Image (cartoon, rainbow, N blue to C red; front, side):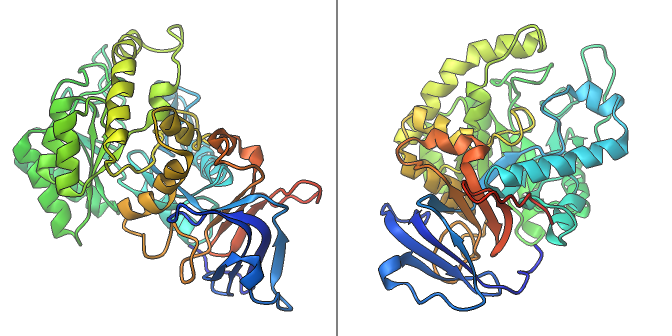
Length: 423
């Protein structure tokens, strides 16, 4: 991430949610120093006097939140066109520029940190960090490991392959170790595996199992040997969920078939559930999707909602992820409305998207919280998300986004000003 531009920042006249506490400060001030670190966040009555030379933003009574996380994105994947079109009909240069646009749009929606789980080369992470492109702070798995005929096998029913360079096929322990090493060589921050089939894949079902137990263990071991990298598992059906957790993954992605045993195991292992409810709640048009995907979604939707609502009630570790790329980019915070729909309080949904997600990504000591010493990653919403969390879903309500004290977006009503997301 590019360093702060050398100016301190002050935001006043805001309602403050710090991402950890259940309390709200109704008349608050936040200050950050020239390095983009928070020096004060609390009641205006106890705030230090505004200093000359500090950039001051009048929050106009809006709600100031920590920068939000999306822990399951596919920023290199277009949500508005098919994989066939993207893989076979799109000029590579155009593909790169479209990815850069998605990064910017995601940042402007309030997502200041993201974990990409397949389809985003490490170069985009490095470009954001170097200030060459505007976007969320990134962790990326680069690719996805699956077995032949599994969820990440990009062979179409016709027998033709899309030859997606992020789909790694491996069918034994030695194969998955080599695949994991290739991902790590390509700069992966974590490894993504498939332990179950999926709704969107042609050759399997969520109840089908993907990698074998010994293969899961081998990938977890490879990741551990490489600076303790975590492993995330695409796991939709019950068997794949249990195999993933027992094998030592850090997070279960989707988890549609989770049950009491799965919830108990998550607690025992300290692992996270990333339920990607946006994909569950998103309606599918049978005229615009493949028959197998439509039929599987019909079978699984209500089942997934029931199981995930029970997991939320069980208070398992939940981090926020949207499956953007499958779901629309730039509408990431709709996920919080889905969590609330299934029983989570608005405050708990916000904490899951801030401090909870920061814990999953291993950055809870610097991000996800508005307290002194933390990086000033900030989101200002013009409305009160505790009254209606859906206001976060509309990027027009996101009036300011900052990363480490650098303002990336500013659209406060009545000022006539607009700063677009930029490096």
